[in-house]
Image (cartoon, rainbow, N blue to C red; front, side):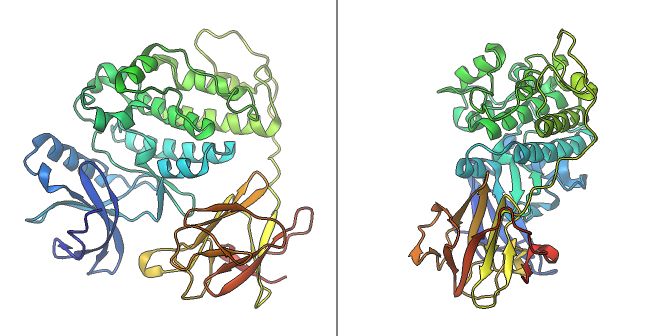
Amino acid sequence: MDDTFLGYLVKERYKLIDQIAEGAFGSVYIARDLETNYLYAVKLLHNKFLRNTEILQRFQREASLPLGLDDPHIVHVIDYGWDGQVHFIVMDYVDGHNLRAIMQRRGPFPLETALNYAEQVALGLAAANSRGIVHRDLKPQNILVNNRGEVKITDFGLARAKDTPTITETDEFMGTAYYISPEQIDSGHTVDIRSDLYSLAAILFEMLAGQPPYRGSNVMELIVKHKSTPIPALQPLRPDLPPIVDQFFQKGLAKYPEQRYQTPQEFIEALQDLRRAAANHLQPTSLSRASSSALALPEQSTVIEVPASTEKAPAPRVAARLVHLATGKIFLLSNQEMIIGRRDPLRNLYPDISLADKMVGRRHACIRNRQGTFTIEDLHSRNRTRLNGRFLLPGEERALKHGDILRFGNIEMRFELINGQQAPTETKDGEEATS
């Protein structure tokens, strides 16, 4: 990454302190607001595009369109413009990763995680749609997930823009082509919210399958598949999921907009039906009345209606914990993914398990619950994570067993499985609790 602008004061106010991403058109930095001491993300347009009118317009759209959108699922734009040296966008800093990076690291998601992320994206699309905004470039790279599992949409550079880039622009367009709706291929001017919902359905498919619905070696091949290839079945790739999931995708990825979910709210209702179906082990021929309408296919025969259960699925029990060997205090591992690190309020970093030791990195390690199997991954910490005395390689993920000893900085902790036992009481913010 190019660190030419590290230390630069954007608009004589936002000091660039670290570069966190670099793309085809610009670089993203963490910046400190010298007036408020808050941390923000600042995107700078590459200088080579200063005379490119089309790219400048796209950069301005990315900043101006979401400027008035106050929604928790859209990255909030604070400021933008030209300061005499650079074109810039100042945005909320999201402490986390984009969905593409998470999928590459984790592989196929549990159904509940995928539905949760998709529902949050749909809520963001609903807020944009209420202002007449269609994103038109929804893909995992433009979906951010913070360390609390909150999902936010970013990069509105193609929103309400000109036609989709031509298929000759393969470097720019290839990432978008995996998720593009059939109608956007023909004319970007005429698409509406149903195009974004098609893209979201394709992203949900990839979250569950570990691969997008259509794959190809070039853009033209992908375009042909989106327009004419039958919708692929998910269940052969994920036989653990209820068959009704494929019924959802038959509608979510329909070739014609009028055959899809028409609004974000309808899409969300279908996601909720999927959640209920999975919890109650329903089959495609035993849908609730709500499911049979929200998930109905075009010209589909009538399904048998069975009243939906009003009981909520039982909350998952705590399955494991970490015990601080020096103090005996415990940390419950109650989420599917928990970040271990050191709090830094100035940088707006709040790990799930906060350890007060200067040798612990701000994002030191991550413990995941993969359907009952717990794993530990070192998150490229400076002092590295140790498992039973062995240093883990950066990014290395290892399975945990009962009694394993973990070391983060100067702190040693024991991993314990507690399935079937009474879970101890957890304190506020999911931190420490005494046994």
